[in-house]
Length: 50
Image 1 (cartoon, rainbow, N blue to C red):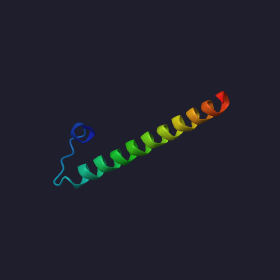
Image 2 (image 1 turned 45 degrees about the vertical axis):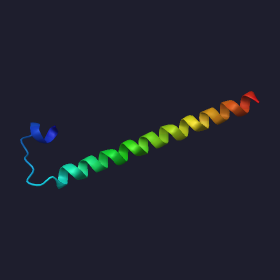
Image 3 (image 1 turned 30 degrees about the horizontal axis):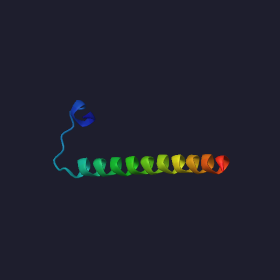
């Protein structure tokens, strides 16, 4: 979207694919981090209750 707004055309889709792959890695890393934080929170809560 930004490339279109700036008027940049791609002769090859390599840049687009690299950007999509980088975005996927960032989203996966963020999801894994959030899951780890939630799991730790649940474990703490469970240990306090028992």
